[in-house]
Length: 289
Image (tube, rainbow, N blue to C red; front, side):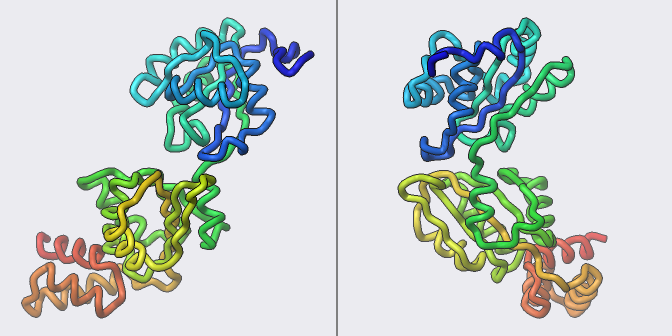
């Protein structure tokens, strides 16, 4: 069998094969991933143009195997993918970069195949989540992944509030257009001294990692235009954080002394060292109760 021949043991064995692809450096695509793309009967992909370029770079012919499966059509296309796998085809799925299903399409394809009792395989590959986490220098024993925060509204406020009291290291993704605003919101939710690492352009020539406090990172981001996708790795809330009851009592005292909700939140945040957003939400709740 030559390097371009399919593996005879896989012929006729239908499966969905999730293939992790490089997040920046093509050298991170391993031999097994290349073989999976070579042997696939169908290559479903988030963007056919980017996948065609990837296949060309690793000398794997695309032919007529490419199918577009992205966030807006994944549920619809999953029906066709399931039929193809049931007919014995091997369908590889790749997103633009990283691991399918991790803040990328792919999860619905997996669920559809599992519901149909079809085989699902994974060829592991790079993902910005773990790369940034280990690069951050922050604790990795226990962590949470929060993906992209909602852009606005109550859902965003709820998620930010949860991060404010989260004791584990948290990992978030953010676009260059919104990273400054998100860091500023995190200062409000978590306090200015919370440790953070902000990394961008992972595995690429201009990879950068900033490590410091949220206040410092927010100031830096506000004055320096960002490029490339960012990963924010946020240190957990410190042990012995101020209890909710203590915050409520302090805010109530400030309100009863005549302070506005905004002034009460500012005073309590400075007094107790808690995030101003946390104190302000308590103030609004007490004022409206």
